[in-house]
Length: 500
Image (cartoon, rainbow, N blue to C red; front, top):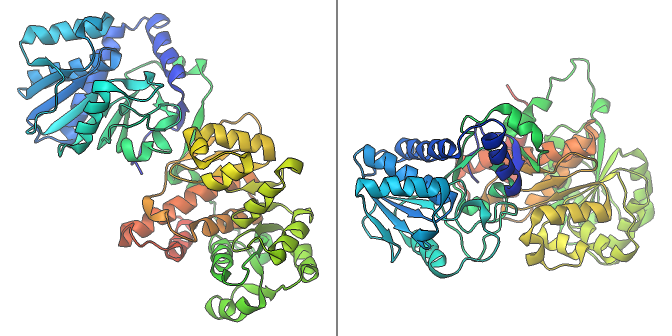
């Protein structure tokens, strides 16, 4: 995932950022050329900080304002005595306004300015200033060729504002997108920079407001909110010295059909590790002995028929339904009983698959958290997985409108859609090591455990997604992403919920 320390939490759509830019120019009378100059010079200062040894730089410049930022970058690099070459994409006659002004200044230096015909093999840094945020269709022609060549080149890539080819509102690569080592974004962070394909394209994300007055931002309602552990961890206040286990809730985890006892065990232990006072497990009799031997703090019950679940439901404050549940007769019987129990629910895995079968008769409810990955979300929405990934924000909202409650659309840059007027939240924690079996079970247990302790379901979902990602980041930092197991998160969960 991109590193996001000290970044703003406000996220916007591209049209909103253009409006912020317009207001800065018209209402606050900041010349557009000055904003462009600040952007290009900020990008150059970042390049010097990250790649101070680079001496041969190629700037890929388009014909719009993003290209103008690239020409400013080239001018600053030229003044610094670096070897800079500008490769033009699109007809240079189409350059206009401020971008044309800086292109002409570049021409006056006598520096290389050639039409793009391929990348040189011996450059130290490639600067992507081709298309910016205005792209809404798949790349074609020389832009597609330039992106592919840049990605194949050994030199690091710096994207100005957003990597070319990346949709700034959805985070989807439109055919192809530059895979930058770093991206510097201006005035407002774009919501598509932190989810989907963007996490492979943006690299380390930086931000510069270009000295735009704070009053400009009052004109726009946030499109989304970025979540990170640094901010979410502030919700974890010290416990009362007189507290007892009854103060921290009772979670019941239901699942674990034959052969799937590990899923329910992971969810239950995660609930306990993040602070639930009591955790019960309703599972197949075959799993009881092994689970108690491995984690004796859990209360594990053999439930081979639904009637054995009723007294457990009566004592539970929150139910996590779905890890390892299966879709055979046993899982269906427990699903129906829990669904009508009146208890707040966290639904995951086969709980979601069974829910999808009832989509036609589904009644939205406010007291559940759904945690689908894109495939499960597609089944709930009668869409293919690819359609969900085309616009993860839209898919999360559609799920909330259909199902009610809180929706956590998992994946790179998980999205939390809650009721009311609050914009969706997007978690910038986590890493590719989480692409392994059992990680979703851990998340469902975390959310259930937090809800049992008194956070409302929206807070529990947002805090839980960040806690989950932060624990995975700590585990990966210790031993690497490849081969990371869901159980590896447990000691880090315990440490993170006890901030010092």
